[in-house]
Amino acid sequence: MLFLQLPLLLALLVGGDNEQNKNSIPEGFQEPISFEVICVLSFHNSSWVQSLGSGWLGELQTHGWKSNPGTIIYLWPWSKGNFSNEELMELQSFSHMSFIRFLQAFYSHARKWQFEYPFEVQIAKGCELHAGEVPVGFMRIAYQGSDFLSFQNKSWVSSPEGGKRAQVLRRLFNLFRGGQEIIHKLLSDTCPRFLLGLLDARKAYLQRQVRPEAWLSLGPSPGPGQLTLVCHISGFYPKPIWVMWMRGEQEQQGTQRSDVLPNPDGTSYLRVSLDVEASEASGLSCRVRHSSLGGQDIILYWDHHSSVGWIALAVIVTLVLMAGLAFWLWKHWTHRESPSSVLPLE
Image (cartoon, rainbow, N blue to C red; front, top):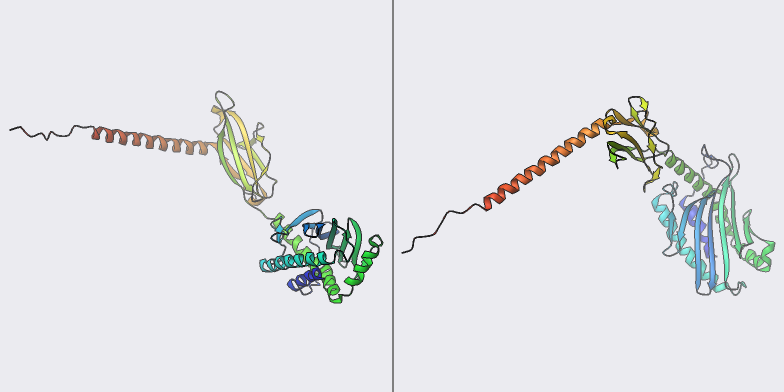
């Protein structure tokens, strides 16, 4: 079968054994750890089929699949694992080609295999890791939601629920001895190494440290003679962060903290505000503590912010006055009477 050629490319892309790291599960992950690719094919008639593909790390979806134009969707920045872009592009191209050929072959044999439209086929393949144990690979094919075929010990086994049709396909699939070796390689070696690369990339991504940026502003006034001081913190990762309005080393109990909101790049944003009397704003500061800062807190003083604000205001007022003066001078000059050039009449 043509669709069994796909594991060959996978084995070529990441071929070669690595016994040292095959069963080395990264620290901090619970066992067992599994990676599974699921493909659901819904055959409505002899010319219309819908497909849905996805990849899963445990219960977390990591990949998707668009059958048209045949692209792998990487749902997380670490979903490529340790595969190179070139390898992934080759895999994507071959996956799409194999998918098309499989559909064509399936259409031409559907009547012979006694599949009646509409029907659905589910294919699941992947691997499961336990520390210190041999990886467990699996590949299962279901028809209309019931077990149909499974790959065990380098050969296909039909399910009793599949009846005679499953037995016919089992005998046919088992004729391709080379294909069985390829699938075994995929499930027992390639998949575990891709899974470990995925775990390493995910761990590195989750352990990254991104320093926050912070700035101050005024919020809407809560009342006459009162100010709302706002401390903005953005672009930090991981999410845990400590932010507080302070007077010296004294925490201000009226500090109000918003929800931590996500930024498009995976970092977070937070705003922390404090309502104070205008006369009491002097001497306040916003202090930020985050794991990326190496123990060096960010401290923003409201007095400095106010000074910068007044300087900016003074500059703006000066520029406005100068522009007004220049306009007045220009207008005054253009309206001055020109010297008389009238000649006396003869």
